[in-house]
Amino acid sequence: IRRARARGRDIIVLGHVAPSGDNYRPTCYEGYVRTVAQLMPPPGPDGPPLIHAQLFGHSNVDAWAFVGPDAEWASPTNTTQDARLWWEREVDEEEGRFGDLIRGVWSDSQLVETMEDERDWALMEEDDHQPVRPAVPGDFVETLLREYERVLMQTPRHPRLGVTTISPSVIPKLLPAFRVFHYLRTPHPLWRHLQPGTLLDYDVYTADLNAHNKRAPKADRFYERLYRVSEVYGIKDLSVDSYVRWARRLLTSKALRKRFRALTFLDM
Image 1 (cartoon, one colour):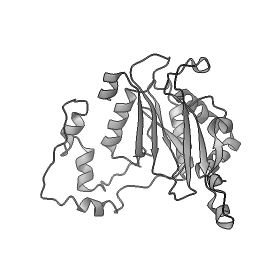
Image 2 (image 1 turned 90 degrees about the horizontal axis):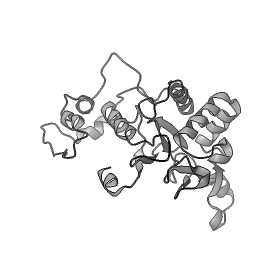
Image 3 (image 1 turned 60 degrees about the vertical axis):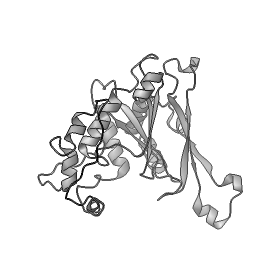
Image 4 (image 1 turned 30 degrees about the vertical axis):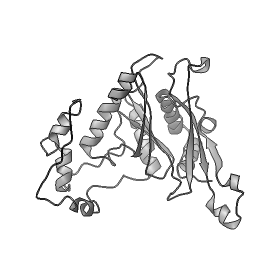
C-alpha cells in the first residue's frame, strides 16, 4: 500500500483464502476489513490510490461476497463454550502474544519478529484438524444470499463497502474452470463514473470432464466458455454499485437465484 501511494498506483489484491468470518481468525478478519475499507473506491472518478479488486479462490466455487464494515459473511455462531486452541486465543485477543502486532497494524515500522517459546509450534498443524468452531451454517449459496440481504438492509449503505470474488479452480473439487476478467484500462465515455482499473466483466471457462471422458475434445476445445456475467445477470460493470444491484435482483427473482445456484457450482 505504501509503495502504491508513493507511485500513485492503484491496487488489485490477490489471495488464496477469501476473507470471511469463517475463514479468518476474528482479529485477522477485522484487521483486513479495516485496511481495505480505507482504500475502497469512493463515489466519483477522483480519489486517492484504491483497491479496485479483491480476487481469491480456495473454495472451488464461482462466487462473490461483500466485505467491509457492513459485511460479516459466514461469521461463526456464538457459543458460550470457548473451544479455541491456545494459539487461536493468542491470535484473537489483543492481550495475546500478537497483541502488539494487532495494535500496531498501521505502524510503518511494525516488524514481525521471531518468537521462541517452550510450546511446540509444529503441533499447530495437528490442532488444525480438531473441530474448533461450527461449520458454515446451511447451504453455501443460501448463506451468501442471507448475507446479501443483510448488507442491503443497512441504511444508508457504507461508502467503503467492497467485494471479494471467489474464482473456481483448474484443480478442483468440481469441474476444472477459470475466469477471464475484463477491466477499464483508460478513461472511456461509456464508463465516465468509473476509474481506470475497475473490473467491468468476466467470462467463466470450464472443462466438461464427463463429456471429455466419453469423447476426447480437440486441443483448442478442452475449455469452453460457460457464461459471461454481464449477459446472465444484466449488469454493466463490476463496481460495488453493480454488485449491490446484482444482489437485489437475486433476492427478488426466483429464476435468477436458481441460475445463480447452478453457476456457483459450475453446473453445465
